Length: 155
Length: 475
Ligand SMILES: Cc1cc2nc3c(=O)[nH]c(=O)nc-3n(C[C@H](O)[C@H](O)[C@H](O)COP(=O)(O)OP(=O)(O)OC[C@H]3O[C@@H](n4cnc5c(N)ncnc54)[C@H](O)[C@@H]3O)c2cc1C
Ligand code: SF4
Image (spheres, rainbow over the protein chains, first blue to last red):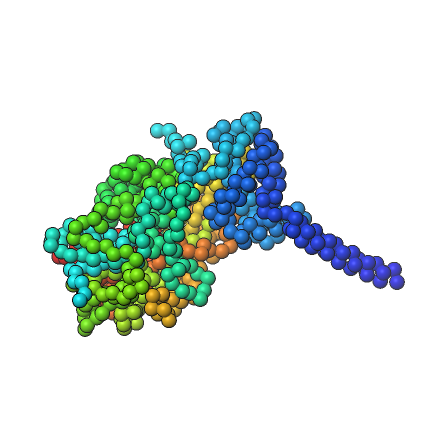
């Protein structure tokens, strides 16, 4: 008898847990748009740097205005993958295409840092990182911070 | 009354422009040349203004020019200068063995010409494009490249120490020094339109040939087909401003790329069973290598190096050869202090032309249809080995983690093999001098002529073939 009751309540519990996770994910997906997710990711991944607080907001606003993500092949599908994976990542240790999500996340963080003075300041962790304008090679050509211009080969 | 010309050229991309350059140098001063270009001329300055958000206008895209039932895309710029406007400018030569893969490895189809036949023209094209490249190369080369090589990154240097001339600074039309109106490449990594006009384009390199008084260029003039009589083509039909027009030509040169060269021939009633069949391109897969304690910095240009370790050899009997590209875009790893302990490599596999992948006519005579099944098992067998090969060739680096994409890229931006060259019409459409087997005054230029495509980028070779074709035709 007890065993049976226990079995039912365990199944019930699992159902409730599953539904809660689904509801939580759907709920958060509905609330967290792509830009909010980007800001959350940046704040988390760059917590070890001193970033000027307004930089995040300015970055996503300008990126949105200038259709930056579309121009970078960050199409709707990719943006949804990032949004959804961000939520799932908080719950599950592993899920399909996690590696892609992490790559896109790196790309976003990279884009943000390229839009700040971080590389101009030679990646100095002690200096406050400040937004200087959306990274756009057409307005700021030759600013790939890892290229030979910044690391000339000694002969 | 139709217009009459000594030469009618279709298209203004690499294939047509290199032919025309040579033709104008060798043909008489009294020649009359008509160039029919389906697209518009969007000058570099205007394209740049568009990118900078200073101007607004539409540029016609490849997807609007053909139909297809499948997901597979073919990308090119159907406007003046063709895809020279948006290409990346990677210009490796083919290897001597690429021309004889059937004899050596029992796969695909041999070329009717050898590396030695094309070598002098490679040199010529490299000079015209002002190619930057290294002193040591995996292919034979008589003299140095016109411009010095781009700088290798720290990781590239380790790979070069291990693999010697099988790992080189990429030969490229992205100038390493200022040359003429072209700026020096500074790794901005948006080569589809270079902000400093560094890469070679038809406009910045050969635009002057279209100002020659012998040449008349008609824009927005789409060639539909040819009138043929026995073994000659008499005239070209084209549509301009929605009106059908016709021009007569002594010699007709198709340089419209592998989709449209075949389409024009099919529209002309070409009964060669090979016409249109075999459309293919290379298949690319990205891999990221994360390092424990190795910064990947100092590379020059968007792609700093080419690896040939997986390109040629006995393995091509069983699976595709592969060229490696070392990327130098400003990517980062979002882990503190490990920003650049990362490489991105692209592994690009050759494919084999297959009969069932083809260009066919559609209900709309202005739009070819591309029928495409998939790339070959031969290419897929190469891709399947990638984890093993990365371990074999890159395993000596301080690798923390490897991530290989579990899908291939949608396109490598190359379109090949729909009007193959060969010895007879049994297995090909044109002869070794690019002349149609049947229509002896029609030359069909570009990578549509490739009987096998190799892992390497096609444009240097197709440009060299155009110079060669002009010389042979006028000889
Ligand atoms: C994004 C991108 C990157 C690339 N990068 C590289 C690279 O790094 N290295 C490399 O080797 N290759 C690269 N390629 C491929 C390269 O651009 C092509 O191999 C090359 O442009 C082919 O030259 P083509 O003259 O044969 O054809 P195209 O360049 O396609 O030119 C064809 C011309 O014909 C015109 N035309 C077409 N149909 C008609 C018609 N019916 N009537 C009149 N005119 C017509 C077109 O408007 C165009 O002017 C790249 C391509 C793209 C799209
Ligand atoms: S890497 Fe940058 S500078 Fe070099 S050709 Fe490409 S866009 Fe131009």
